[in-house]
Length: 227
Image (cartoon, rainbow, N blue to C red; front, side):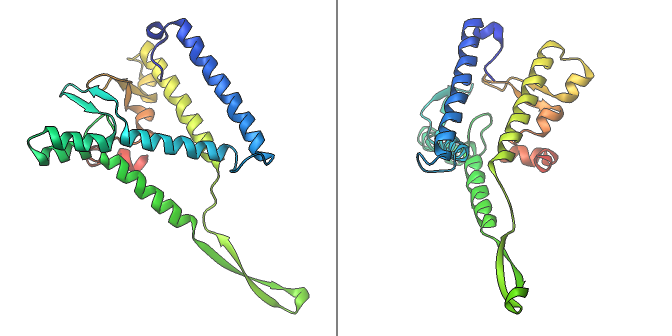
């Protein structure tokens, strides 16, 4: 995630580990404070929601510019849309790039995220009314609303930890033994066009990684269905 140790240096690696350790202690402390009533929210769930919202806003409106080999583009999907429409003569091609560009946030990712949010919120509102009879009150019957889906933060935390550890181990082994059959089965990695962090292109790591664009879903539907 943070590049190889040889490229970032031992000092920077120690600083990164220290920062992550201190950040974990701060999150746990704030979670305990929220659990004891000092503030609003549900502890870790609040921090998870904040992190997700921050990621969505940053990927949508990030002013950072990146040289992709086809010219300088903005990282934010919404800003990139207006930038492409202004700078490109072919407006249809500009719209296509804004919706389906590779290795950078695009409008398809943003719309898919909004759609998933709407579907999840809708499903969370489903209730199944279970008839309950009380024998002590001569068979008086009431309906007990039962949620159809039960979700919590633990599944998200455990899944994120599992996937992160698998990515880390797979990338570490692939850098050391890229020709080994078992290592390639665990995951194959390569740098995207224009540079940046390595992405999985094969193996288990690729199967559990999210599709990066609509074009990738059409090109490899098995990956999308498996994910």
